[in-house]
Image (cartoon, rainbow, N blue to C red; front, side):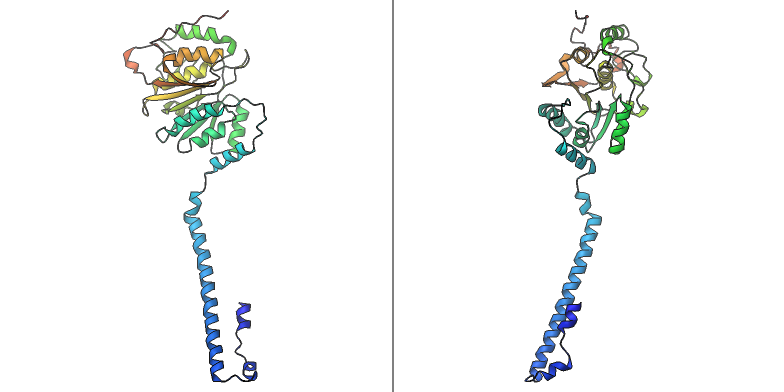
Length: 307
């Protein structure tokens, strides 16, 4: 406004400049009016535009921004050290899981066993659905929730060991019509392979996709994935509501525990695809009233100890 005040020259000195008659004075007056009108219009437009932009940002524009969990995932994978020796999935393996999530009817219920390098990615790829992470390391679960409070994660205590694989298989065979049957409420199961200490509400969820990438199973003393694969097989066959089939992915599928337990509880006839170390099974619901107790009725699932 200081500029406009100096520009208005309607001052007695104007009439002392000489040669300025009534016509010149009239022109100066009209010029001053025009300039004042321009300044007022410009100022009004600037103020109203700024207010309108602020209102739009408050009401609508901010909603078009990427969700925080997607931003976090992008930042994490953009800054990660690609030379790290951590075990990760290959692009083909990730693409296989992503394709199923993309075609899953929303909201997609995605259960993931194992906190891994891809954890933030799974949560972001399923951004319209519900993703639940399960891991045996309580400190990692707490750390994950602290850094990313939008992620739903729980810890579970595994009592199994890789060295007990074949003993657990024998136990399951002896209890297949009892505590280890393929259709049951896992919350009340006494099967040694059943995971029954998750939060109660998770057993009522109709899981559309289950990914098994944990717990650790590289040593004989590690928990191994026997219980997780068994539990995934029961959840898929026992679920109520949702899609008729459940997609179950098993990572590091070539290892003994993963291979043996997948044959027993997920069944080779349900294996639809393999990508690298990832096995993709599609498991249908099973009617508990038909008195069927086989996990894999169309295959010989007998297992003997390897020598």
